[in-house]
Length: 349
Image (cartoon, rainbow, N blue to C red; front, side, top):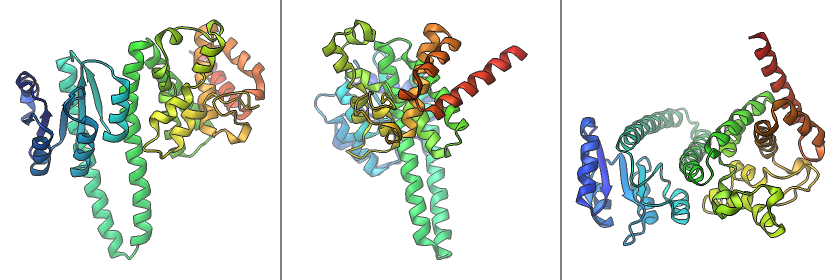
């Protein structure tokens, strides 16, 4: 299969730069200065990767990316921009399903590595699609078409949702890190602990995956807050500032909602600041009405923050003292068990 990369850009220097980057890959770079020409390339050739400047004011980049997906849903998409524009980035993720985001001036080695990884991802998805098609033929022959089709659709939806969120993680954490240094490492640590808690609670595998994704994305609503508010602690905020801050889970959920359709990841992001007694935000849900994933992420997120501030033992004690008014007792029990196990391993070492 020929390797084809499409560049939508009217700058000849950009075409030359990308061409130099991919020369060792034995890939053909097709350059188009207009959407019409770019889409004709997509229809004529098997395009594995599309690269486009998000800030092209003369074209609707999001609409273009959607059209690319309709021609070939496997095509990987990389966008370049000279600044981090939140609205257009959100629109591109939710509608165009971009896979990588680079701000200018971009690093040549990082961009080349990204292109190589996206080409590999395209090949893997193509093989998975072929395998599903083969399984579909076998299922039809076995007269299990109805059941197989239902399972196939469920699996495909889950795969696409996971792909979209992984793209969002890479993009949004990059943007948030630029405004709030350390946020990327914090998100990774929160996700890791949330995964340990979910495993200890023996939650289903698909639910654990959703919790991992939501834990990494739970702070993306911060991108809508002003810089001066991001730098303040709760005690330093005015009443109006605190009320504005409390909207970040709702904002994050709205960003992730795909054309109005919500799933477990969106629900976790929206409700990860709810308290068990109903005093949390943004919806003041109580107890079991709070999604279990949100209760897990709440414990993981709070513990990571407090452990950095006062140490693990003190953080654990404080959260136990907060009790079931704030945290799910089942999740706290698993946190205690995980920390005790970690302490035992350190002592034995």
